[in-house]
Image (cartoon, rainbow, N blue to C red):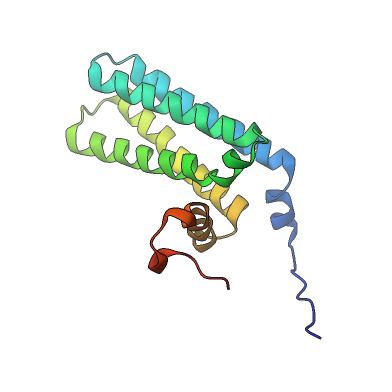
Length: 154
């Protein structure tokens, strides 16, 4: 009979998995996302306005994913995290390429770097590792994937 493998959890791991940590992390993610959305909305112009609207939509998706008990929302809870991570990284890259370089822009980029860092912590908190994150994403879309891309049972 195979022995059960006991997983050793450190106090840090226990803290990261607590409901309080999840709530604080979600509030920080939504708050930082809304802050950068606000900054972009005040800059004027179509590009900044669309960027602000994108951040607003992603903040809503993160919040819905955190509070909704619906199974399909939980199944695809990886998507808002990945979308916000990519959107934020592309916003930073666009700023570095196009500018304009001024104080408020650097403040917004600082907020966005903090947002990426918190997203990484959140992914590690929920999924345990980047590999588990990718596995969860693939498992959620497995029914529509070609056979060669479907995750196999470990």
